[in-house]
Image (tube, rainbow, N blue to C red; front, side, top):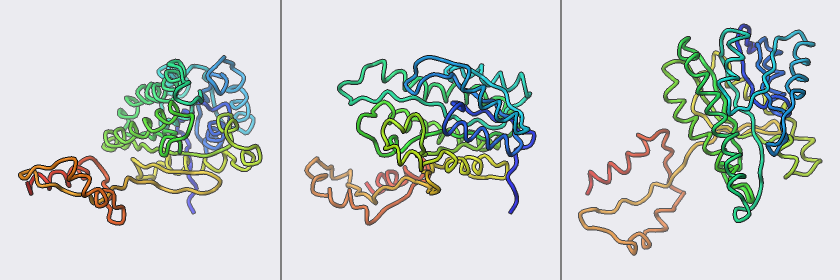
Length: 300
């Protein structure tokens, strides 16, 4: 089996001072990458700042014989993070958008600040870092981007309206970037991990947290960022040594004759067929999704 290596590659990992980000950063470095360890050093709730979180991980990498540099900027200043990579290593090959916070509250108790801060860190932050790195990747015709979503974004989760919004938004962003980046060999994928971290320790029992090691997620990130990979636009759930790929599924649906008109009552009469998941399609893109609609127009 050929070992996956990142010699001479430069990798940015955001939120790399703890948990998943730390695990990713250490493994990229172990495989030869030069790593920008970004971490604002704030709390899991987006409060405060400290240089120690990033510095500790950089020290670990250097002590093991690797190359790394710390960056303490917020991901909302993503251009500064990318500039750190360019100033120190002269290029950027991989971006792992991992930084995140929680502001969990039921929807009726959630403040606008709770909503905005989660959006700023998860969505705006991932945009800012990726947007700053994108021109450098396009110029050399190579790049790998990872966005970190969550089961909360895919399925929803009580008390996490803001977090769920942000996490599914990241997958939507990655879908378009995968299309735009493919011709430049920029591959973009989304992971939805479950792992023990400062974020999950507030909602999962301690015994489970201990078993859900971040190191069980990192191998998927390494595989997706391999220079030999051709996979892009994917969504993967991962945790505790299990990995699965997700895709959209929809029913075959019902086409109503437009020439005859149709009403809400007609929709109600066909509801069982409209929602029948024993017969399904799996559209892979917007064009395929439109085919059923265009066919119904042709049969009007």
